[in-house]
Amino acid sequence: MISAVPSPRVLIVDDNVDASEVLSLLIESEGFTADTAGTLAQARERIAQVPPHLIFLDMNLPDGSGLQLLASVKADPKTQGIDVVMLSGWGDERVREEAQQLGASAYVVKPVSHTQLSELLGRVR
Image (cartoon, rainbow, N blue to C red; front, top):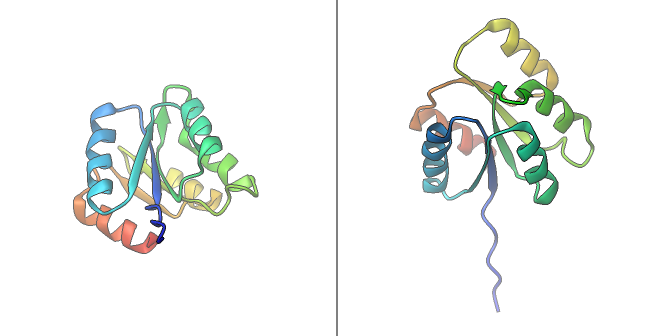
């Protein structure tokens, strides 16, 4: 009996439900499994339950900054290997540099195009 290899999991952390749904559809069309969280607290729960391979993380969430979650993911030996792509509605260079220093794999200004997403997921594969 051949067991199926599970598809890579992607966690989308964004309080904008519409943006999360669109990104989920794009991610699933690329063969990945998508999960969503609208707050830092929900994201922490999802990461603890089943760690994803990749996190798309919005900068501004109702319960804090995405940078907080990025820092905690990269500081924990159990999760530090997870790739984190920061998403932001603005391209502030200081914030981009801080995200990179904390360990973000990429920093993408929203909205995310299908081409950008395909390139990012290609790198993860």
